[in-house]
Image (cartoon, rainbow, N blue to C red):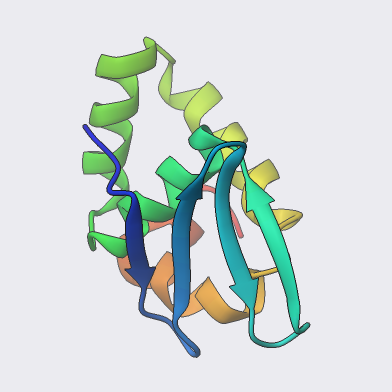
Length: 104
């Protein structure tokens, strides 16, 4: 799975991610701040932008990183619970099944 250098996550307000030399830069339209995400965090957001379901996301991560479903679920829960974009992307999490599988 190759992440694009620029991708958009359509949510309440679109999030535009752009690859820079230290990670992916994204603007928070609610907090009016820029954030830099590492490649793994950006990869999670990219999978959401591709409208993949939880099971598809897990299969890709398992193949790439060899993680168990429990570890994958915990990683997603921790990531989204602390994300400044949680309120914006929650409908995407519900649609993908992530909110149910990760108890968000």
